Length: 117
Image 1: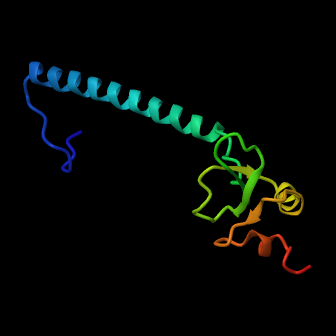
Image 2: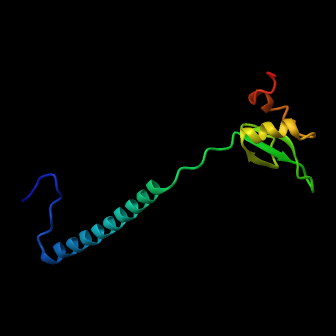
């Protein structure tokens, strides 16, 4: 069973037993790592996908003011005190809240179709 591509084995029994024990320990480590990787892959496969990011954001003023002050698109870098909103709530805010404005940077009024009216 001497294969030319393998390293030669020592002739002594004690040396062979040491090599065998080392291989057993190495195999145990490999098996443990395989189990860890399988568990990780299973957990990743069972993970729910992240929800879609909100397309619209309502920015609220500081202090006790509870009404939104601006409407932003999801791409806008300006909305610091914002909460996610639906298209309908963004439209309703711009139409009904007297002090709410469309952000002049991201122009949600254009994307919402309010400029076409």
